[in-house]
Image 1 (tube, rainbow, N blue to C red):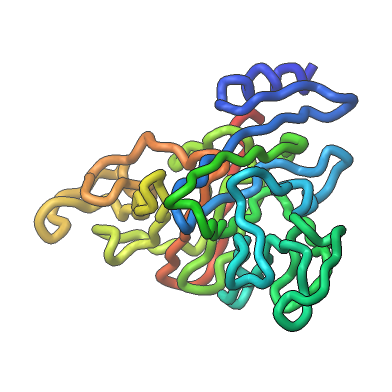
Image 2: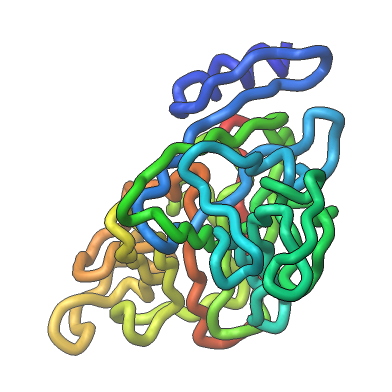
Length: 267
């Protein structure tokens, strides 16, 4: 009964779902229309656990294959130290000038510097940049499919100024009420508070800050209901906006410590 209720709620979220055995499985589509798109994985593998990178983003028309990461599409995942783990879509060629060819590698993701099919699991909530070589001139749509995450919540550890975060769920999550922060810094404006910067469809960022409840000139006014809430940059109210499913964001931490927890919106 619980899974049926979950399916009914999830059906309003813009993705398509079905029950297969004990899992709720589904898919959504992602439009790539610029060079860099910030995305997050919001499905698990249908057999449980992390979703394999090859299953998550199989080659489709519009993607660009290449000899190296420098000329093929990239998936760039931020690591715990703030650097990036980069995978590229191989054309199957390798060696000096691409003199060798492996048909099993053609159209598969390979770790930068390697000449093999990558084995990389992507857990729900994994956030990454998709670098599309032809994204601006030749937009395309790719399908992401898997099992809907049934966890109660997922937590990101914050230990640096900027951390990539994304919702692990197939439904949008309310910024206020759906996302909990520990160790966060509240402020009068986005300039002195923690930020959530969500990449929008145009490639810019929609910015929200953790308010201390003060507003007006010099913070002379105070609203207790705003204190500790997310407010959209330039506004003095608790936002009703959501963190979109499948999108990615930067979390800007002033203290460089704490956690950010996403609560399952249909639990």
